[in-house]
Length: 230
Image 1: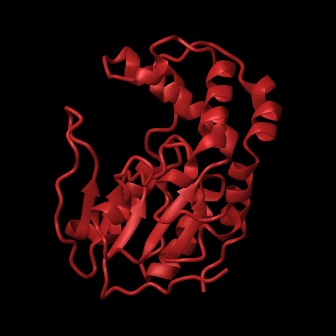
Image 2: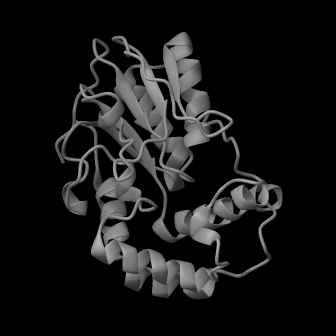
Image 3: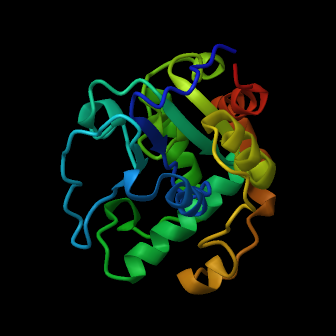
């Protein structure tokens, strides 16, 4: 697959796909970029991130969502160089479901859960939405360009990694960015269900149904798995 070579004379944009090791990657990026790491997240009250002009050599890391109108190129129209980590689709879907409930219990506004849907109802609701239009909860919504899954990383990507091989992929990313090798630093992973107060539910029986309903998520994951630096 085509890949952008890393160019330190341009800003780099790190796309934090929710529930896909973005917090762990952030710690490594902080070590590599220091003050050049610029975070792009909502404020404590949900206020949108401030707009600013990234400088050459900066790395902007945070949540973006093209479908919601807050994609990386909505904020930074000149953005050309991206890195991203993806996660096995069903595992990410379950983790996202758990986190949405954590947000709701913490007093956050999650209107999609107002009617208390079951996991199966939520899964089929997301599928029905995605059949009609791109789902803001889907993985592709976090990416800078709309494209068929197999071509999703053909434009602008300096690196594409997977949570499932996070340690080795961080090493490969270090090579791509010409940064020192370091052990992968895990953040916000161990004990996640306990912190989130998730219900004790076995989601494994839903895995096959999810795979049948969301083949495009697996196509996207396969493209990420096959991606290699230039």
